[in-house]
Image 1 (tube, helix red, strand yellow):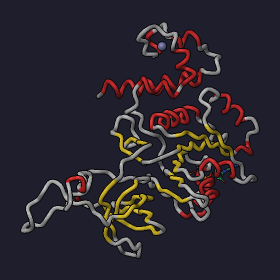
Image 2 (image 1 turned 180 degrees about the horizontal axis):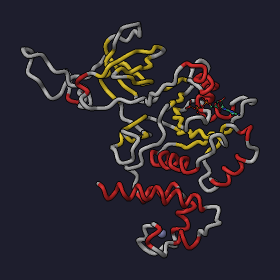
Image 3 (image 1 turned 180 degrees about the vertical axis):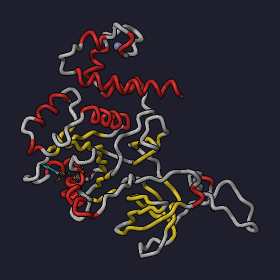
Image 4 (image 1 turned 90 degrees about the vertical axis):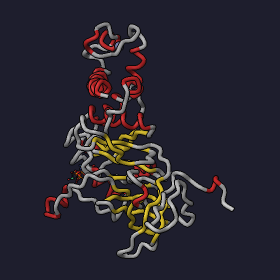
Length: 332
Ligand SMILES: Nc1nc2c(ncn2[C@@H]2O[C@H](COP(=O)(O)OP(=O)(O)OP(=O)(O)O)[C@@H](O)[C@H]2O)c(=O)[nH]1
Ligand SMILES: [Zn+2]
């Protein structure tokens, strides 16, 4: 006899045909469903790792509006052989942790949607030069990571082109103390590999920073299109979806081609400052109820952090983000 406990409301409801039994609210579990990990999403088709096979699946219609994203742990039924032209069905999405969001239209006023789920680390790939390092961008990524409960990692590339750059970045982030790894062409990428081992890490970076070069070194055969390849006419790819690549030593890197920022509209002003510990400390001297914007006056951040202060750049980043966060708060 099945008891009520055997039924799971998260499970898919199988809608019976017209003449079959009357519809009931609660349906049996897909007892034969197997575990899968979503590696890629492309036009309604999901590539899932099931044991050692890559299985193509669709969402079961009964999943309703429930989204499925790269990094999701799912339950699958149907043809799980992974053979050509076979299709499995995703019948359940497991609860998520560590999810990163993006704006639907790369426009901070549009709605946010989940980009990846179950992330351990966010790796911000930045070149020291060519293109130059953009602290504002890194700060934004750090806020997204800390807000999501994800470990931030700074991956600095082209370290062969600027001997002082790494020390400058370390000084800038002295108070936040993120994990920093470096790479240059003539050295193996062992330190990056060590940080990524057995973790699920999302990589983000601007065009030209060397992200594809790094991924190709970490995942031999990944075949990410680099600038060097593009110039000989293989064509650029404009996809903006994420794709998970398996690391030889264990773990996954999720590349995010075309993703240039994360959605921060859901971040509150209070949680924003937590990503700026050096400012949080100063703000303890603020008048009660200070919202730390430039206009309010008497904000300790302005009184204590002068134009030549090393924390000035971080303060400016914080204020820029604060403005967009406050705008979002008044909008909703
Ligand atoms: N000197 C030096 N050049 C590098 C390094 N890493 C990458 N490059 C070069 O920088 C250029 C851009 O590298 P890509 O890997 O294509 O950059 P990307 O970040 O993937 O850029 P998109 O493909 O546009 O997203 C290429 O010509 C690489 O050879 C490095 O550590 N040092
Ligand atoms: Zn203040």
